[in-house]
Length: 144
Image (cartoon, rainbow, N blue to C red; front, side, top):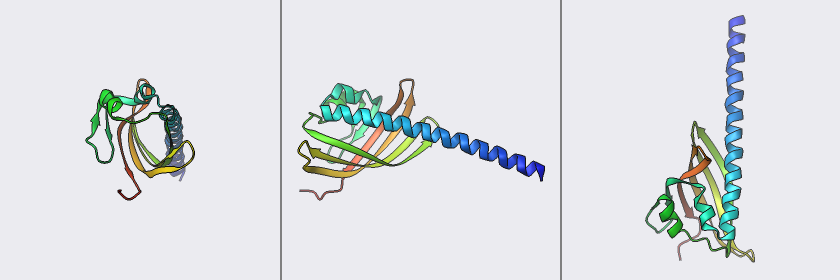
């Protein structure tokens, strides 16, 4: 009986460490998302691409994938005229990789809804913190 209690205590101890690590990753990613949104909403593309890995892949609707920071920078539209919001629905952590599932909205500065949709980010932990490695998103609105 004593051995079972020790085993259960060890299992719960490891579960708490794992749970705390997940909370730490969630908080780190949430912080990066806030900085990323701030850069996008200001129209600062140089700032935006710094939150992607060097060889990141950006897959948007109706376009070829953009590979690497230079292509992402050239192909991304963020001129500061629209506002982006991100809402994380779920994050799963796998060591130095994390998957984020969420929803987004874009609107004018006058609060007119332009788009709403879903996204998936695959994050990589780098020497400079968590960065987006793969991004894919789609609109929930009907095609025009």
